[in-house]
Length: 136
Figure: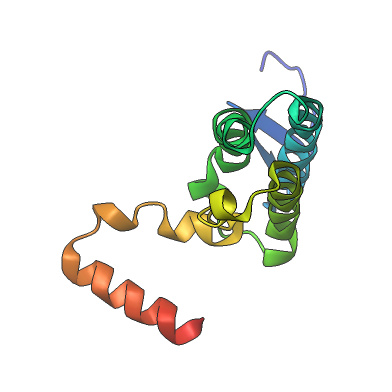
């Protein structure tokens, strides 16, 4: 513009979603895993003052949304990248230390494809459920 050259960038961030120049989600997933891991420090410090159900509420309200943000966009990333997010969740599960409460937390690797499951027509839901059973 006006004779000025634009700089090339290897990463662009808009509304909290980072996209690399080679169209991989790895930098974005690393960033959110690191940010959520830092938030786990609060959960660790709160262990002495809160019950497991309160810790789970803190996790679900303050940390899990960081991990899920824009998952419909980056959900197709390789499982090796998405494994980082599951590691953050497994650390939170260890901190909460109550398997009965944490049994229903969905793996972040499978979250993106099942997020809108309940908005599908019943016939599509049946087909998806059958395919999931077949491939599990």
